[in-house]
Length: 206
Image 1 (cartoon, rainbow, N blue to C red):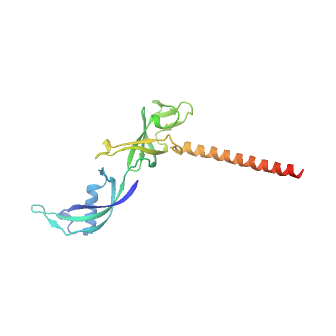
Image 2 (cartoon, rainbow, N blue to C red; image 1 turned 90 degrees about the horizontal axis):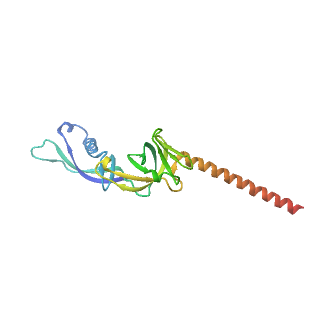
Image 3 (spheres, one colour; image 1 turned 30 degrees about the vertical axis):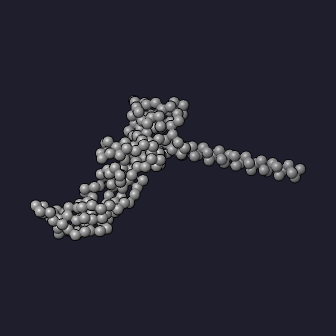
């Protein structure tokens, strides 16, 4: 889930930036410090949108820089359990598929891909359904739901668990195919209903 949050922090402006616009320098220095960082409480800090308030500058003895206390609006992404996301399969392994969605990667365990039993085709680097013969491979677009979240200070240590074993989830190609089939069934039923109504009218006339 993307959010815009307001945070307060101290920013160090080095002497080389004294002749720049103060607001731009503060935003730039703060963004260089926090952008791309994971905060366990806030989520992934993506960018600094604006600075709202800037306090008086303070000088620390022995340091030529000026420190400003400021309030910022920042854009963050915080993965939330039960959130539905769309992404791209970036890697297939024997235990599942890694999916990139926005600023994060998540894992769909092989048991959470479909209701069908999926097996790993190492030669072709894809997962194949035993009964349905459905194929999931690198580059496929998918829709999944977040089921577990473990955010750490490093991306490599953070874990996001995903599932596609729920209605309206799965490879987008599968969902479109299912939609077309259901539409076809609906149209067929509608035609049969109209046909039956016509027959009833004809029988009444007789």
